[in-house]
Amino acid sequence: MATVTRRSFLAGAAASVAAVRLHAQSSAPAHASLTLPAQATGPQMPEDFVGLSYEVQQLRDPTFFSASNTGLIEQFRAISAKGVLRLGGNTSEYEWWKPTPETPEPEHPRTRVVTGEPQPLYYPVTAEAVRNLDAFVRATGWKCIYGIGLGTNAPERAAGEAAFAAKVLGPRLLFFQLGNEVDLFAPHLRDPKTWNPQTYLEQWLTFAHAITAAVPGAKFGMPDIAGRLDWLTEIAELWPTIQNPPNVARLTHHYYFGGPATNPAVNIPNLLGPEAMARVQGMADIATAAAKKMGVRVRMTEGNTCYRGGKPGVSDVFAAALWAADYSLLLAGNGYTGVNLHGGSGPSVANSVGGSLPGDALLRDQGATPKQIATHPHPFYTPIASFGTQYRMEPVAYGLKFAGLMTGGTFVAGDLTGPLQMAGVDATAYAAKMPGGETRVIVLNKDADRDIDIDLDVGAAGRHASVEIASLRAPALDSRSAAIIPSASERARRGRYSVTVDHASGVCLTFRQA
Image (cartoon, rainbow, N blue to C red; front, side, top):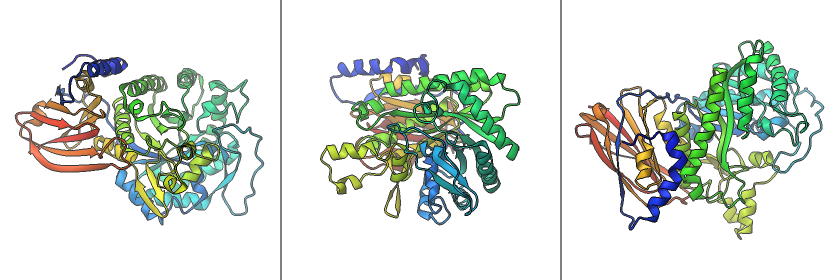
């Protein structure tokens, strides 16, 4: 097995894969050998690692997150038996708390209109919506990250909303989030001349202390940045100077591969290439270092393939499933406590980015008819799409679900990806010891053309073991479908097992002692 670490290997993986391909004479399967380390000394992937993210504006319709929305509940449970629903998004900065029907709308501060940001269209969050939300998460078996606006809110209103949400949600409340993508407040919500991590932290503390006074023991996730990783570093440096700090449970941030839809660089080869995961690894290094200084762990609370609603032909196809699985497992292996992929209804996400989805304009420019455009999920990246009254898991959700097969497991040490990519195939691999004693291995072959034959040595875990196999697959990378397909179990021989992982597919192998 190669001695190079996964972190150092990813930095140069793209060049090595390209070099091998340039000299390849055929599309014959590549071959690699993997040996699993005996000990599982890596991070544990929490049981509630899998998550979805929605705009707070979804609460404007109290029937959306409610016990009566059985179709949506069914899809949540299909993705994961335990998960985390995060409410936030750009529209969270324009909500106001309406505890009673008689509560008047407050005066709002002046904001600026900026391309890609919401219009200043305010809406109420009602007590009915919060009660229905609780019934929804009870029905799904999930927990909730509850987002409260910071950009146009007031501390006393935030505290009132938090107190009600904490009372209603009870143990189903994971933590509060104050503010969404605060590193992007300067153009439209704050003074660009003075807005920085320190002024943000001063304002956040005012809100957080008000909430803690109303909800003793309140937990928070912060700063929920869009992409300015230097904010994480600076906030971590400032944190020890704070006296009596609020209880921060998670350092949180967002990540989108690229965007918007009109950007030609947002394409399947770039999405799946090793360079993309090398950037994710670099992000994780910075985030986990900052979290360590604060004595907390990290959660990626909002992200997806392409920002501002996704890109048709990239975000809503099988390539997104492979990306989501790889992205989620890479972060889990770095000690992240979860990933929340963003989605929801088309209107709510369109409102969050200024009123329209760039993907729609792209399709119109390509000559698509309104009927053809309507066949795509809206937004294009949503994990769960709605078509009329029907809900459907999209390919990206299947990738998240596939990664979730590792939840509860402890990752083994060592680099399993390096040998695969040195064989000339864009593939990654992860392994974990599961709570029931079984060993689980996931291989993701993101290569568009080449299969890979793998000789796997699982050591003692594979002696006298049955091998259960599940595949993540679709007809092609650009297929608008995905499936997780189980197959008949086989036997490992003296701790060894060989498997062919087809191009554009994933395989999960579970080694269970007989």
